[in-house]
Length: 281
Length: 353
Image (cartoon, rainbow over all chains, first blue to last red; front, side):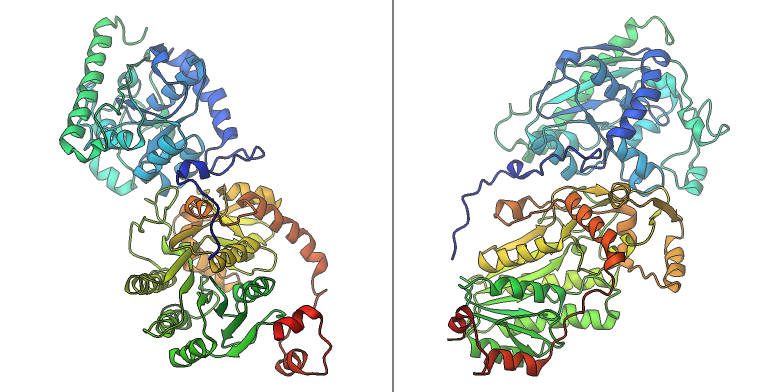
């Protein structure tokens, strides 16, 4: 038998090389589409419409993977876009942020193209692990998921259950810190007054909310935001290497960490709300 | 390890190309190619035996020629290529027969290389962005071809389990692309416009035809035990592929009722196999890092593969009909190989001796 060349076993050594001629990444993220969105929609929303105020940007690591965890609210939530833009604008070393989205988007025409082009990736544990561990990227998750966006205006800033702690396990396995993020403003920017279950079933959408502009202004009304003031606070990262080897086998620990992250964000939200003098200014 | 190789599907594209590649290696003493059809490319020293997948006959060949390595390249991965029944017969029953011919306590076979397909994973909405070898498909197979691939692989995997002393390689190939390879995808990309489903831009990975042969050759010469994904580096979206080909992307297929539209299209002569429907919608990519760690040669990235295909398309219109396809003539081949009247170069004479 011919001997094989001495090979490393770390999968990170075998990532494909970057081809500079390409404008689309292997994940389907397009520099061109993202740049266009960034220069037009995000720029306007960030600076003029929501007038974002950012605190604690220095907590976002300048290199290596990190899992950003944020609260999530509103129909077609603008929070993900604003967190992306905040890192791009305020961070000394701007980095792309990958947003995990529901598999639903991959199957819905139009969304399927757009969401992946502007940095959305299907929320599959393998995807998150590859990005965090192998590629050392920033990934943003909303552990509330659909429960957050379905939430009505009367329940604003009350965090839903944080899934089953899948995000904690993902961060532990990838050996990257968890970075909690608290966002104030999204709930007022896109308030949801009611959810129509029947219409949701008929249209095949993820949910069918009643907002100030939807459905009477059509699908575009989904993106009709009220000019609420946005405040984004990046909290202290939580290292995940403090619990010894293979901490993900301890389901209790995972649940505790998930609850802890949730409590930190919730406390921060109360604090930010207490200091907020006006929803709009 | 491999000294005496048996190739199945010699008449298939891969069988022929692989035989040509192995012929160049003097360490490989014997190459026996079996296939029910004539070979489609010129071979120097490969012995061709016209036989199907009858295991009793194959077993006699394996025993008589003292074969130590069996490379199975027969798998049909494009359901347009044959009828569903013939595909099933070839992919599932044929695989079982070949495994039966390799097994037995007195079998000289030490290694089996099985060319499988990334159709094993299918293409679904809730797929991971990159399949690794240990992943299973999230849903049971939806098309007959995918079902056959999964079943055939299951047979090979259980063969490997029953014969732990054998090296069994399962190579799951991504879609191939190249100038001499004719698949449903190459037909699709050769159209004046690249049709797409409205609102979808699927991710695609192609592997260059030469790399397919290269990887098969690598697996024949080295011992790659287990399952390996075989794909080029880089994943392109369909719109990127269209722009590399220099053709407009035409999102003419409706997102709902795509199957009906494609059925109508089949009437006009453009047959799109069912396993391609979901790929055009959701795309698929596989993680090739295990293969790269095993030292397999991959010369082209997906982008380079598509660019090479684009170059081929540009001259194909001009070159059409310029070269005669190779035709196998048994008597001529036998005369050239065995007749004492033929003056052979030293190399060939040594190999004959």
